[in-house]
Image 1 (cartoon, helix red, strand yellow):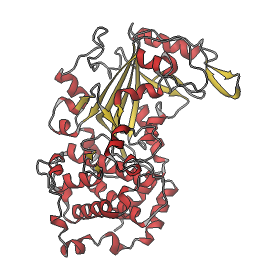
Image 2 (tube, rainbow, N blue to C red):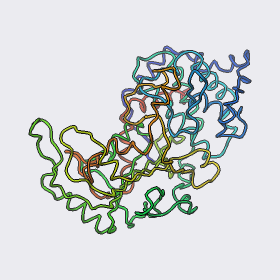
Image 3 (cartoon, one colour):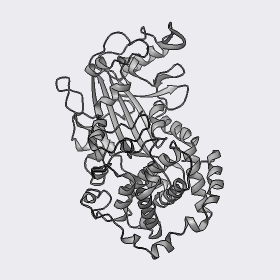
Image 4 (cartoon, one colour):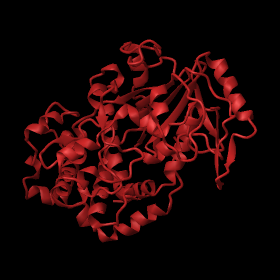
Length: 460
């Protein structure tokens, strides 16, 4: 991966803004730890026993660091966040910037840095995952909806130091396992959709085959094909979209060609001439068409460059078992037709399964599984909004219902990658989404800030 040469203005913001944090402040951890009990300040509560992802010892510094950043709890002590794909933080979250949570995070990061805890685990897979976990916290801190503060910058400085120490050479990143191939080889799940058994999860073995029945899509006009997903996770993952018509690859390509050649995919809204609506005459794909959204993990190599990996973090599959006629008018979001005509399936990466070599670390989401909404939420921290566990419980949503919450229009009109400026076409380059995601990420404030802090460390 080429060396990133373009640093946005945030890099200089990072360098200049650090004047408020002196060298003694950044590197004072050793003196603080020598005169305190921080090295032994481990959480020994009964709940901590479950936070053993990176080592079997719950008091291992890697486990404690992960827990100090990812654990959210109610006032009654109910803990959430263990082995979640993404941290339970929203734009408005202030949890890690004051009080005991902030101090615990700072203390644990200081201990990690002073003791060079990055040397305790050499497994490249675990190092990659911990870097990923810390990077998510850093991006949240950098992009959150609040004013800059010394506490925020203290946290960001330490996070980047650990992220850099955990970084791998690009060759090691490229040699990380292909966990999708591993789960296919394990033959744990059905390989195709069963029209008579809608509840049965399946994972197509030919999803990534260049000439297989699934066709990788790109957006004509440039930019990520799934821009909302890329933005929601701040460009730390590339998102790939695949489509498969029941008759196979040739039929799929022919259908995409008919879409590309259709003269008026959008028509003016007669009630609001500044807006356009999908043309109901647009060629519709057939019943049984399948769509897949794949989330592919990215890392930061030891030179500070964005580097793609072969690790799949998430797979979402939609099967259009039926296609209701018509298109909901205007902003009508009646989703009942979509929910009754869509079969949805999802696989998520589990650290514990990945480290154990169990089916590539991908676990199927259960039909009754619930989670807190993160993607396309309003940015309100549910833990800070209410102190009652019962109220929190009501905020949990069925995971498999999320797809139809956005993709509620029938058939082809459910594909939100289509827009007035972008049309979906067969991808001409399997690496295009990674490349365009890298370009998107490099224009973000959080990336410029990280690069600035990274370079500042190298100068010391």
